[in-house]
Structure formats: structure tokens, C-alpha cells
Image (tube, rainbow, N blue to C red; front, top):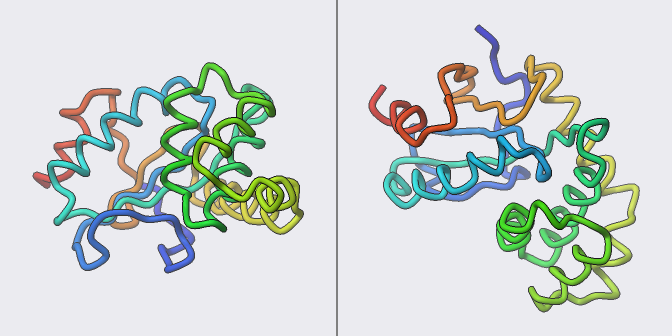
Length: 172
């Protein structure tokens, strides 16, 4: 079984209860249709088990298949620098069929981000390095597609694009 090579740290984007005994890590791609299916399922899981779950999102943009995946990941990272990672994460998934540079700038404006700062950060090498670190960590952990989930450091292979398959994690 594959194991998460990069442990979860305070530098990860996480939501839920940091004191929980359950840590669910997703390696995801904002343009991946399978990740788009998982998105509302994860939200439901967090609503139902939020006090008993920490959810971590890591970037795994499959640029060859999804040409806007990297710019979307960079947009989420740029929004994070202004305290709005999860808001941008959500808007990207809610609009994944319309991921273009112009639309992403519009999403940033909708979130009332400092647009000058966002534009500069969005194109920064620092954020590209962060996205690449996520990607490399995923590759070292055996990730070869998206979404890929790890529960408490162990790869979860039973996700079948249903809520029940994710909720089974909470019962284990």
C-alpha cells in the first residue's frame, strides 16, 4: 500500500479539526472532472464529520490533460496569500468548465482580493515552486491520477466517486 511521503504540516491548506484523529489528504487538479465530482462529496463529508476530520488539499495539476490546471492552482495559492485559499478553491471547482486567465481574474475580483497583489503573486516563481513541491510530493507518494486520497498517511483506493465510498473512511 502506498504511503504519504510528505507529512501534513501547518504549511498545508487544511480545514476541519486539526486535533482530529482522521486526516484526509487529497491530491487534486482543478480542471479534473473526477475531482469536480469529489468536490461536493468532500464538502458534505466536512459538514457531517467536521469535528472529527481534518481535510488537506494539495495540488496535483495534470497539465498535459488539463491546460488550465496550473494557472488554477497558482490562483488558489495567490488567494491563500490573502487569506482566501478555500474561497478560491471552491470557486475554481464550481466553475471548472470556465477556467481561463480572464475568468480566474474575475474570480479573484469577486473575492475582493487586492488585484495588483494577486496578479503579481499569481505569476510568481515562489508559488510555482510550491505547486511543484505538491506535485513532486504526490509523485513520491505514488499519486498517478486525480483525485488521490490518503487517510492518516495511507492511500485510500476504494473511492468510487460516491459519498458512501468516502463516508466509509469515517467508519473504519
